[in-house]
Image (cartoon, rainbow, N blue to C red; front, side, top):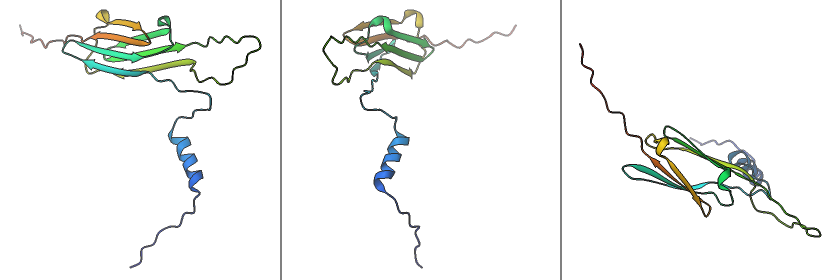
Length: 140
């Protein structure tokens, strides 16, 4: 018995272009991508998050906690100073907003949570909320 295959003439370069275009976020030349890179660790009582957010003022960083969901957002402002007679040849610095949301394994005690920002690193200390213990009802 003969195997039959369908012939599909393709242009590999064109296929690669469209495959990359639809499967990856589009980035234009001159627009660097900024991401919040994090390390998350835990012990019995707290989660500790170290998030790299360089070039941001602490007033422009916002952290929201809702149960076990933590959101970090920051606004990087463009403060250009072009001197007279000078022209910018290339700019690779990021200006805009960036955010990251993640879920932890247990709810966080929002009232006891702490945040510190030093040298471009945001450190979050997120105490775990004590699990509500089950209660047995006595029937009267």
